[in-house]
Image (cartoon, rainbow, N blue to C red; front, side, top):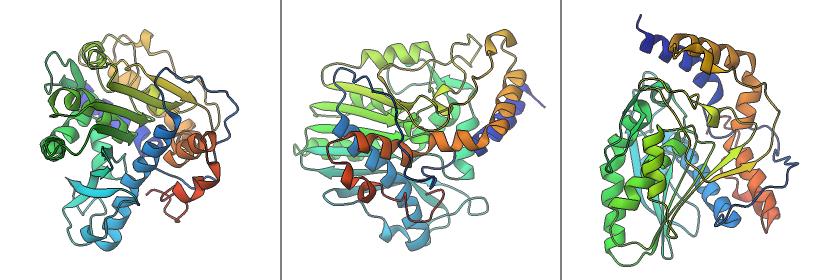
Length: 345
């Protein structure tokens, strides 16, 4: 078996434990004992709003499984403009009630002068395979895009033209000024890939703002350089990270390995909930031996499975942020899908 295939096997052990799903019903969560440092330009209420829409992306999957494509909704006051579907196999994954070949992966909505694009996180076997394809390939949606994870890029490439065409159609109408991008976990990785693409290739729009949650690293240093070069007063990017969450620490960063060299973009906003997990191994001594790295990650995942899942829950990301906001009494009602009995919406 090749080193690449072995790496995929070992990463799959971790992903199947630690990064599946948007919510797990682990109580109210949100026990944040830290005082967050608010970054310049970071808007808490906007982060809460976009966290709610990240939850909606998970809930749309459940709506389609139970009621078909016509059952997919967004909460008031948003208007659903388009649902984007990914192709899946009904042999492995749950699919829409009226279409055994697809499941929602993202949606576009509008409200006032705003356009919203929300990407769903990992929720099925098809997503698992995409998550673990960590060998890098070129990101070509902008010039000098560097290299990004093949699995994330495969998902994004399949849906990019559909999303970009609809967003451009809305932008060209002249009715919208702001474009917001969000997502959790895999959805956060897709939001990373969308930010430079939308910043450069969307038509007349005043601002592009991206807030994502629990995002894994998506690309190499050149991708980060090009990504951050897109940022300006009206092109702003933040990533909300539970400091106890394992997934934003993956794939392992700082390794100068061929087609496996990951760095994070800036704009990190720390929150805190869940249990403190042991430190990851120091992979620098492994000499870019991806088999050894994969073995260590798999062992770590198996030994810390419960804490990994708890610390990654989008429901707890949302409740932690919302309870910091201006109206915490509304948090339970806004936590869409977090208290409906679906352990993995």
